[in-house]
Amino acid sequence: MSFTGKVHKVGAHIDTDAIIPARFLVTTDTKKLGEACMEGLEPGWVNRVQEGDIIVADRNFGCGSSREHAPLAIIGAGIKAVVGHSFARIFYRNSFNMGLMLLEVGDEVEKIKDGDQLEISPETGVIRNLTTGGEIRIPVLSSMMQTLIDKGGMVNYVKEQLKEMGE
Figure (cartoon, one colour):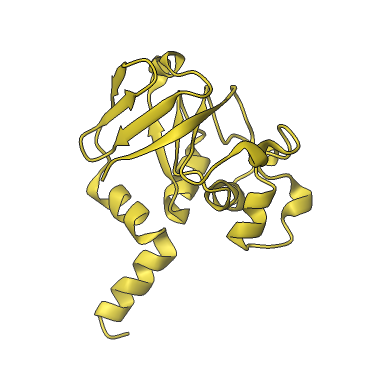
């Protein structure tokens, strides 16, 4: 299942406090968290985002605290995926556990500019830049990681598994 979205490019070492500052951690409501997405980076950043848009980040996106609120805020803002040079390991796992797709592209991130339109096909491992005509090849997500995305995160996956087992 491929999808398209507009790029919102951010820099390197964007920490979880920039993604969702601590003052907004009084809820786990995804929609509410989404309203404050990237407030620590740029107040009002989320107002430019449309449902299905894509964050493109430089190195070490999601560093800092291991708060699960950060990927929830991104999801709540309507972001479909984050394409990045690299991700902080805890943020990477938290994101998939919450149902947010991350795609690591290394130095290829330099080929993507703010405002570009991307078409992402995770099942074939292709990111097409519809603005420039460029293409980036990435490893296909493992079946487990794709399942977590499809189910909306680990909690939903486990609930479904328990239901199937009659628990």
